[in-house]
Length: 139
Image (cartoon, rainbow, N blue to C red):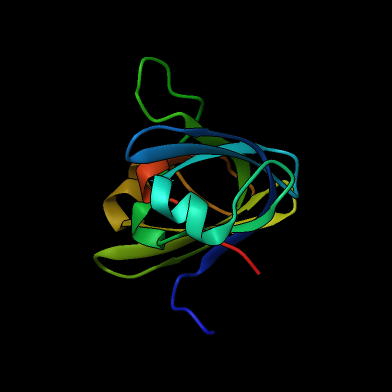
């Protein structure tokens, strides 16, 4: 299956906490950083997700926010440190490619944000992703 979702990060499930309707799935990305995906309990069961499962985390570029450092006092727990690889900016929007320890993320942000944050190749950034915006795929 081919997908339009640019951000596809391989990893291994470390833990699954299942509630009545939703589950929190902790994933260690191949690059070494950890993320949490909030998916339905049914999806955990249907996909056979358990500790040790190989998964691919899928995130739309429009769901990745960027900061110039770790953000305190925020509910977003997925904060991946990285370095800007490339900025393709147009008059309104920009695609910012970020290397996160060997994996790649693309963030779709406004051109104003690129300018205000001073984003350019080599800039250190933190990619912020809500756990509810991460989908998981299995092989």
